[in-house]
Image (cartoon, rainbow, N blue to C red; front, side):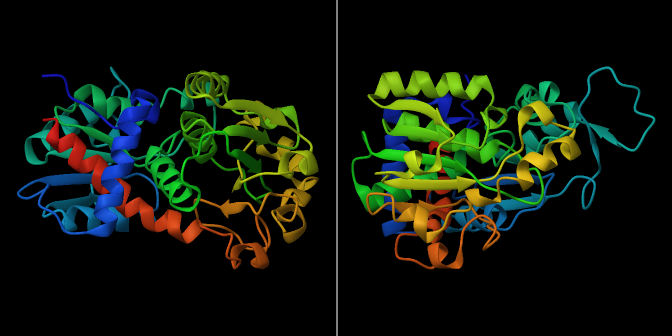
Length: 335
């Protein structure tokens, strides 16, 4: 039997995405279920988490299941992922054993593992979660690596709740300043889901250096063509915000400077004006604002924007619980 994983929404059709969102809406209306009765999931956290851990652990409980939380290198042995390596360093066991043993214990494995931010050509291979998929014999869920598909679903669900049909709605994915260079995962995912939903998407960023990896730009163009939307890039703040129905903010590092952050710093520091503020939101068509959280107030967005009725970031965060329950229930139903 072929095992179905949840690694990226690009592996799922628009109909399958809509079905997950519909199931998530049902869970939001009635939180308790039995879809995971007698079942379990291992949550592997290679990076910190607040919303992701809480929503997955609670979601499993609400569906009658049990979540085991593990942090390799902290409360579990550090894991080696390279094939053929001589393990005479800090790692104690190989993913080939870890994934197969966990598969004997649990019904699903979920993984959160950020890039190392040294070499994008290596990081884009997503080696950690790929190794789990290679060796596990149960479904694997992406809790954020170089994409964040669970955040995508929560975001789409929140937009649908406020706007209904998302087709042809103007969507602005805007880069924002952050004192540290960040993962492109949420930006990649926002681009994927907005184009998958048939929205007219504008990627707003300071310079061409901040355009996302061509893999995701190509997926975005394919999604837009298949679902009646569009995708374009802009470096003009006023033009991009004008008439927007949704503004989604995220900071990310420029890929050409990946691993050489000090060289990028001057560009980032010169573009602090990309902050989402009241003046920019006034250019929209009564647009909604959201962010994946955590958000540094008055750096990425002002207090006024975050505290306005237009901000749906809390709705989106809540929806993580519901969409992840839909994902877990769907994967178990397919076993």
